[in-house]
Amino acid sequence: MFVIVFLTVIFYFRAVIYSIIKTKKMKFVDIKNDVAFRKIFGNAKKSIVLISFLNAILELEGLNRIKSVTFINPYLLPRLSEEKSSIIDVRATDQKGRRFVIEMQVANKKGFKQRVQYYAARDYSTQIDSGDDYPKLRPTYFIGILNFSISKGLSYLSKHITIEEETGDNVLSDIKFTFIQLTKFKKKENELVTLKDKWTYFIKHAENLKVIPENVNDEGLLTAFHEADKHSWKKEELIAYDNSKIREQDERGEIEFAKEEAKLEGRRQGIIEGKIEGKIEGKIEGKKEGILEGKIEVILKPYKNGKTAEQISSFLDLPIEYVIEVIAEYGKKKS
Image (cartoon, rainbow, N blue to C red; front, side, top):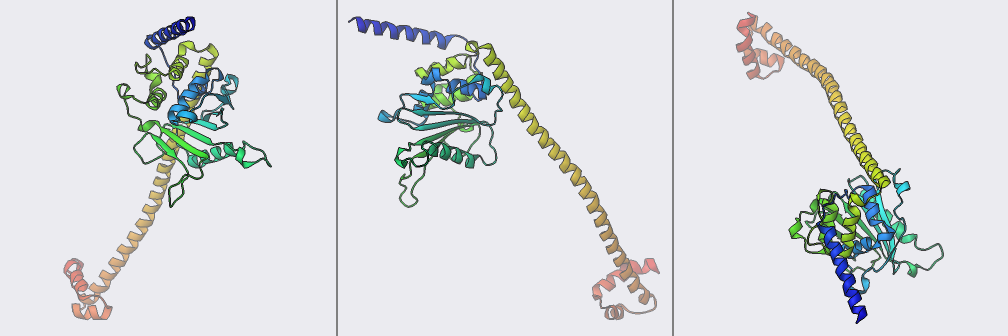
């Protein structure tokens, strides 16, 4: 009886605490930022966040659900403060030995599809050393959170597996890809039903929210919201976050500057080519006019000496119509 009462009190106070957290005003970070992403999803002390996210996005049920994770590259602020934001990932393994690579990619880049396949294959192959038995290999899951689209389908969640072409059987099932396409996620707060919807909404919109949405009741996602609140961050973490934002802006500025330079160079090249082309066209046009004037003189000279149009046409091997037209237009002017 005492145990039941004790557990009831614990659940009650936890519900009260979460209620307070959800209703108080907060200022959330941008989850797509590299420091924020790894702090929230790569925090070994808050592994409930990653467990909830993976179970929701991969739709793992029953015995397949993840119960615990071990981080392969945990969140380390000193290391992160010097890194560029081009590739942001979190790597972990669960109680069954399955590998998980969770990556945030804010911009589509050349070779992206090839790279993610390489990353997944590398994580899969490095589970064993040379000479080890292949059956020791466990499945590898690549989860890409993208701020662009990778598939032609309408769903924001894009899943990829290897299938047998004729039957559609998934025989080679150890490496799987799941992409969350944020640009395709259009649901509003009152339209969120599944936990994967709520997680995607959190990643895409957190920095614009002031409170935790009312329909969030998952402990892992609630913890993620709390971890994303700037008020809970240490000073050095906020500095690293701001520095990362500055790096992102600088990188975007470099790209935009390169684009503008390319446009200007294109214009300069176009002007030069236009001038050259103009000179060439002028010469060609001049030649054409010279040839035309020469033909006119050749026709008019015998015409002035009393030759008929038919005679001139036959002698110069020119169409009679052309000879008549030249005589009609230039004969009086030249006479």
